[in-house]
Length: 186
Image (cartoon, rainbow, N blue to C red; front, top):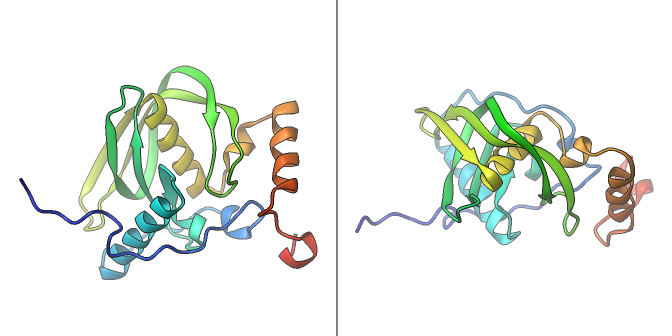
């Protein structure tokens, strides 16, 4: 048996940015330094994701405008996928578009049926700069698309229309975590 540390065990949870925070609305910057700072950020991201009981987390969700995300997500066959991607790019989606339940750590407690492709391929790099390709199906494909969206400043609610979108935004406005518009700068 290999001895490895648990992702996030040396990290510290950071506060999450919530709907309306400007950190969530812009595209992330490319990572150029594959160093100890990046490794520490990834550890903090795992710690934050686990503390919030999530399956994925993008750097801008903790206010860091870099193209990085972490995941610990099952697919539809309940196989666990654990990892991170630096400078990820969604390079392929295919299969049927399925409207399935989707939530977000930046909109805690709110879910909505969101259309996503059933298969996704993402390329990127490890924390040490090694090229990686990650392929996901089912729920894991949904996670990969969701996190790539975050890094482009897109939230799952942006994929919703009509009544479904209005319901999510109304629930967010009434949520106990909703920011006071007068103090949040919105």
